[in-house]
Image (cartoon, rainbow over all chains, first blue to last red; front, side, top):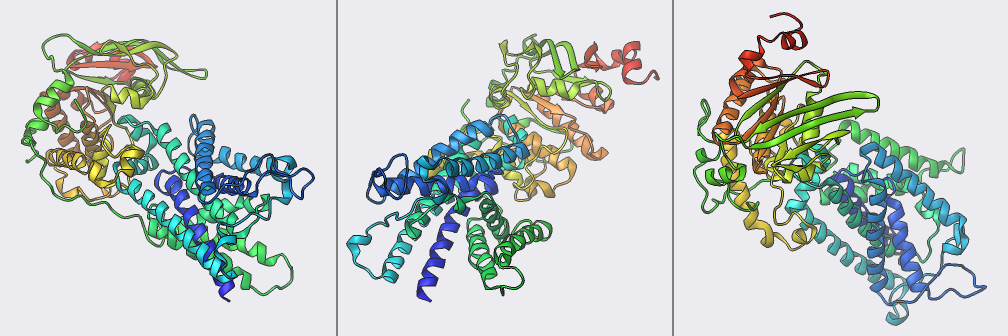
Length: 334
Length: 276
């Protein structure tokens, strides 16, 4: 039972981190990144090749290059790769297109990515994927299985807290307000002097980095990664968590990740296996789709809605009388 | 003028380079043509807006007024011709750059940020604010708090003038149509415009609110701000504008004083459907 709980807890932490990154893009900035799982995969693969060491000719698995870096360098490198990939893909897909078309292009990129890695075996071992990925400090700490899993869970929670603080600062700052403005009305944000293309690339970069970190955390825990782990529907599981929890609210998104990944999707595993052996797998996606629809219809703001920003009353030094700003206006009291 | 400076009567006057009484062209359209595929929306449109004046842009539906406005604002790139701001070519934008140069636009429909409060809507109008970059945001509240407080106070002064002070914490989506228009005007003022481009600021609002918007625009005019207004309500145009440009089928058909234009046959035929 402890074994199961530690695995489930780690999966939830990974989901929370990934959903926070998606929330920055979708919840705050309104960018429909349907290729989000691609960035999680980029992080997982980066950490894999940075910990597996050099590929050996004729070995069990093929990959184009590898080395062996100590923790936390693989995680940091994964975040950098995710960020650069996000800006790169954003530059191609988001510069000239808007809204729905961006989402379609990103979905296609996600599908292409899976097929490319599956087909080109020499790149990252094809559809079989990479395995035996070493976990940090495992040989040094001499902990039992549960003890090590708890230690790794602790590392992951620390990483999650760092991500939370970064996102909280962005959300509270004027930058967060600009992202929400862009989400509400891109043309109007642009019309008062804000470069919405740069803002989109920014959230693609930061969100991509966070997604990649989530992938890095996950891959060193499970020790393997293959294209079947990051097919495009996985993105919609993360979207469901953001929608259910409450887009734009970090606490809400964390709750959504827990509810969707930890309770809802995990709960379907308990369904009785009747009629068709594939029923459990199918029922996960069917119920996920139903959950998204229910929330979009009946509670689009999610369980914990975005918070209303309130500003304190501090007088600004040196401000003139309000009447001097736009002059006396008939019928308007000052 | 930096974004952190409080808005004052003098700073507005400096910012808009008020030169009323002298013929300084602040905006100039030279032979602007806009084609959408095979459709010519604007055809060799030329007119100018003098600093400190209010110019109306009128015409029947489909005349090309909004396309002209979007072209001036940098949202649409002209197929040929030029848009000049203070003698500098700003044709083809991008819109954020045009806005930062001083041409700030409001929208005919839904230009507000619905799920942002009224105060947040106004603060978005500040083009550059500490904490609006990634590094600035990560530096934390201490880094940007003071600059934001100054802008909050400035926004409150504008909200007072717009009689929206009690709506500061209300989401823009919860306001009436007329109040949303006022929020847009307030947000545009926060951007320190040289020229305010208003696309049907009185469309879809009741008569009382329309009159109020008109009075506020008159107040802005008195500060020396240059306004270019697209509007269907001819009474308002007549009361507000120093000069009116009339468009039909993408071209300029007349310009001048509204009272004179009412008597011109081309205007009556194109705009008023042949009836006086």
